[in-house]
Image 1 (cartoon, helix red, strand yellow):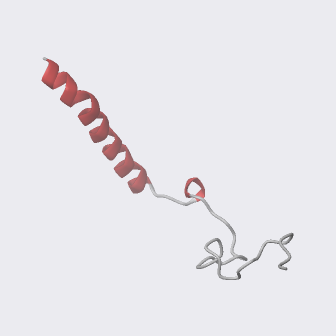
Image 2 (cartoon, helix red, strand yellow):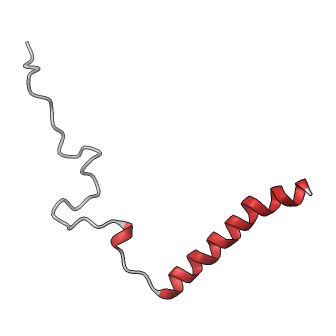
Length: 61
């Protein structure tokens, strides 16, 4: 009979494949970015807001 009290652990599980376990974890808000990157993001936001609100308002009037 198999001992089912301890779950099987595969060394190549999806949680560990392709990840450096000893590497320091970083997230996007912690990443460096330039003023150019911020300006580009702002322009994309303005275009998105213009499309989101401008198109329905333009169709309504």
